[in-house]
Image (cartoon, rainbow, N blue to C red):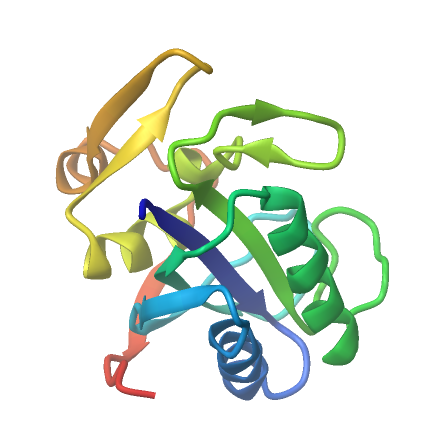
Length: 174
């Protein structure tokens, strides 16, 4: 089985509880095996809107699943259960779950793009990801997969959005 990676973010309500509840619901899905999550990070919003900092983390798991749309459906259901409502892009959120990578699948579809098109541009994804994985297999097309060394990527990261990322909780045994 190849790995699946998700990111979790929240900046409304009790953000730490929101992402941990979402994570617990994800790992309870019947097709999820061997989950591991990152530390929890406080990150500045990428948006120009005035809003609270986000609480973020990522997780990795094996999936006995070949259909990324089923995972998308389940993550959207979990977001709804936790109170997410449709909002404009970059608006504050009670919960946001993004599929970063689904095995080594490359997909361009209006409903789902894999890998997540901005994951390598976001410190709030890269920092937590590096805490659980030193490198990733990153599909650049349906025929090509490149190995990305996350530490090297972070060392050379151009912080265009002036993001601030701070590890808050490193106990990932939850």
